[in-house]
Each structure stands twice: as structure tokens, then as C-alpha cells.
Image (tube, rainbow, N blue to C red):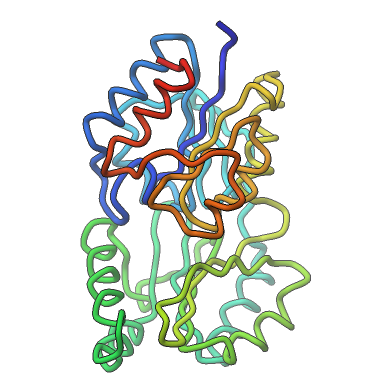
Length: 276
């Protein structure tokens, strides 16, 4: 059987968002595919520090920070943090515009202290209490630190949360030439969250870079994701599959939709495509 390169998003695809333990069926799928000679890679928006707890389960490499760093077999294939000029400009523009920031270096992430206070004040709005629980879960499970602890190390991307689209207009105008604003689905009450990603990379470009590094044609790649930062990855891979729990927009764009994570979606998709 032709060797495949399999790329897995983490949150919402391999694990429940903000956690680090895949369901047994997903681990069985990964293990079974590797035994058949396929290579399985994590391909995530998480930085190395936040994805590292998952490496114990056995993967052939990783794409972290939405494509900003790539490692294969212990070798660094690609590494592209922001320049100091980009970092300082981005942080200043977001702060000036009243947009909350979570900055991600290689090993750590730091979030504005005011974000949780803002979510608490907005908890009466539909969805805001859920966002607060989500933020607290991320901080507890993924080790996100307060912004006051940030010491200026290189950063790869920024996760942002805005009280609406209006505060994002200035950052989008000033930063749009160098960065892509990947907007995720909102909560129905005006809040907007997303990721600021350097235009030099994305998950789709990372699939191309790693496939070229391993001399494997793109038609022999398979990718699984659930959110909008997976769009380029699913469009680039020979077969792009959206999880059944994924965003409506991504489900429409994907070549195929498999059952949700909670319904053993990865295992069932791996079995359906003869990867086990």
C-alpha cells in the first residue's frame, strides 16, 4: 500500500478542546496507521509547549503554531517566529484597539489579565459564561500564563478576542499586509475570536513543506481538522476531512465529513479509507 502522510489537528479533532488525552479509539487509529507504514503528524495551532503532552502517544513529527514551526524525526524543518519589529507592532496595535491578546512563544503562552475580567462582566450574555469556562480550562490544562510574566521571547502567533468586529478594524488595516486574520465562529453576542498568523506560513503551506521534505506527493496526504485555521490544510492535502463537530463553514469546504470526535470519528474515517 502507498505510504500516506496523515495530518491531525488537535483541539476538536484528536482531543476535546483544551485537554490532552485522546479517546482510546483515536489512539488505536494512530497506532494502527503507523503499523501499516503511514506517518502521522500533529498539525495544530498550539505551540510546542502546549502540544508536548501529546507526544507521549507516538507521532512521526509535528507542525506547531499553525505552521510556524515544523519538526520531523527530531529535525527542525522550518522555524519562523515574528521579528522583534513585527512583535512590538502587533502587541501595540492590539492593545491600543482594546483587543485581548494571548501571545504564543515556542514553549509558553501569555494572556492579557483583563480577558477573564471582561468575560466575567459579560457572563450574563448568552455564551459568555461558556467562554469564561473555556478560558479557565485552557489556563489550567495548557499552562497559559498572565501577560505580566512575558519576558519578550520570540512569538509565533497571537490568539485574539474582541468585543466585536469594530475594534478589529484598525488592526486589520494596519497589520493585514503581513498577517492573516483567521476569524473563528463568534458566540452570537458580538464577541469575535481568532488567530493572527504570519502570511509566511499556514497549515496548508506546512503540509507542502513537510511533504516536499519527505519527497511524498501531495496526493498521498490526508488531513483532519475542525476549525477555520484548518481550511488551508484541508484544501492542500490530497484528501481533506472535516470532523462532524467542526464549523459549518469548514464542513462545506471539506472534501469529506466524518463522524464527530466523540463518536470515534478518527477511527471510523481511518478504517473507511484503509489506513488501518
